[in-house]
Amino acid sequence: MGNTFGIRLGEARRERRLTQEELGGDVIRARDVSQLEKGRREPAGGAVRFLADRLSAVPGYPLPRPGADSRIFLALSAAQAWDERDYLTARRYSRLAADEALAGDEPNEWWEMAFMAAACLGRLHDYFRCMAEAETLARHPLAAQDQPLRPEAETLLAVACRGAGRLPEAVLHARRALELGLSLRLGVDQLTEVYSVLIGALSESGLQEEAWGHCRALLIPLLEAATDPQRAGKGYWEVGNVAFRRGDVAAGLRHYAKAQTLLTPDADLEVWSAFNRTSASIRLAAGLHDAATHECMVHAETALSVMGGTEEDELEDLHSRGRWLQLCGDHGSAVKVLAEVYGRRAALTPQGGAEVALHLGLSRAALGSREEAAQLLEASAAAFLAAGALDRAGHAARLADQARGGDAVGLNERTGA
Image 1 (tube, helix red, strand yellow):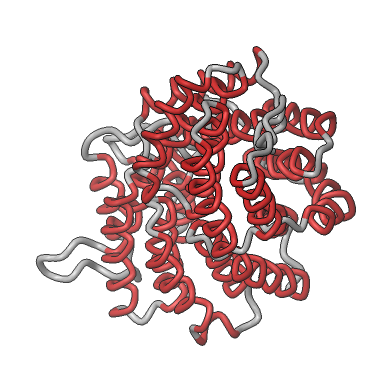
Image 2 (cartoon, rainbow, N blue to C red):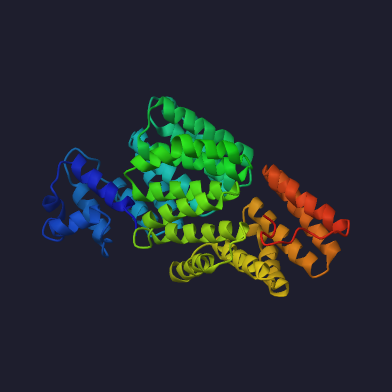
């Protein structure tokens, strides 16, 4: 459940100056319309069509073309599919809504629907197509006007570049989004999202101290003033990631605890699942194979079994299972799990596949297969280098040299960190 549908429904009703009672008519009670707008209730079968027809019937607003769905029906359907995490359907409806808005000479509505269509590609992990559409939006004449459209497009472009394994480009676009956002004096919630994307790209690129500087001086004060619990929770989550990556486990745990109070399964199961998935991975990288880490793994796996997810989600959970076994010293079992993940690495981000190769190489080395370990570690180094994660590339290359030289391959309580 999300609130995208409710927000769009409420905006459309207020724009037409209807009361909740007038919108619901004799079919949907005013208090039920209120619950829909607050995101506390899902629309029942036929409700989206009924509400869209009521909104379309208001004088002065476009009627649907003969044989076509109304623009507001398409937009509401896209929003509801987004809330249901059905991103293929959300993309189809948002593209249709964008076409209708373009035909009706409604450029701002076209932008909103085109942006949702591009964002759906990101959620589907189709990062290269997402990059192409976000780039088009960033260069559109609307984005040159004095409004927050350009920083939104640049932020989406940064997220897509990060997913595609183009970390230097992700940093570039995130910096650009921040510069534009500050000049346009974006609100706290919008700036929070921009900063979160920037520090994530910086941290994954190995620029930990710059990322931490942004966290301490700018992002954390914004998070304390944020009004959106989900965005604030995601911000603390990203701050915790940076703290862990720079070796400050205490700060990482502290900020993860703040994120945990804000990101709940009732508010957004998908985000809660992703937070637990990332938490398990980051904690394992810091050598924390304790009860709390195991609980994060179980939460992520349980959410995946309940709501489904992408192949990437499944593989990341398996990767954590392999890391857990590795840290427990069960390298035979770890190799079986990690080898499965590595065989399907095309579904992961390039840097994600590089991490799997590194950890599989370490367990292979622990079992005495040094030549195979060296090959995996060299492949890891090459993949990290191509993605722009230079510190991880250097780390993997050093481990590969150790494996080829017959030295002990850096296995300790922080395996591969």
